[in-house]
Length: 238
Image 1 (cartoon, helix red, strand yellow):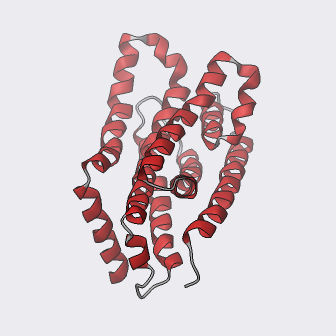
Image 2 (tube, helix red, strand yellow; image 1 turned 90 degrees about the vertical axis):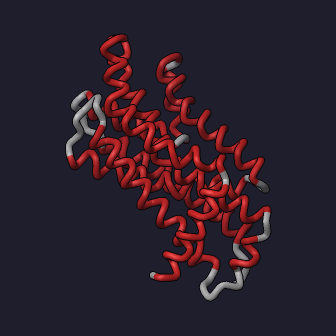
């Protein structure tokens, strides 16, 4: 336990030294209050927004959830650029244990931030069962993002580009839902799509189980693919 606390202090020290990374730390602290009070306030001035509650919630909550994941991905790419990962390989634990600590921490943070965001959401009151189910899905988002970024990017600059691409991908299901509903299922390969469907089912009083299973399956499949590529790229025989 003391070793993992040392790793956590190491991560926080590096994060606070890079001002660009502060943005990702601030995102949850800014968006949770905005979702709780800001969005409902805007809805009183522009009532038409209330028709899109599902899309608003579905876009904001993943941003809150994956902000620590994006931060971790950039941190790890920065460590790779500076050769720190090579140093970490000679530490008294295996590389898989070191990265497992980060992946596990991101899963916990993703679940907690997602559950907190849903519980404090000012647009809709979610039952505990709904919050727990969605939090489990969001827990997969946390590890998935850094695995995707690190497995595809070779340096921090490419990582920042991929962060932007992921943010764009989050908006693709929204555009299809609004502009081409008959084609929205095409975005089913994007895990965020199923969150919109889950929230939509809840708001309409329908069962969300089918969408939750599809979301978990899609996200887990991408996780396995990304982890396989990540392992080949990062791990060496310990």
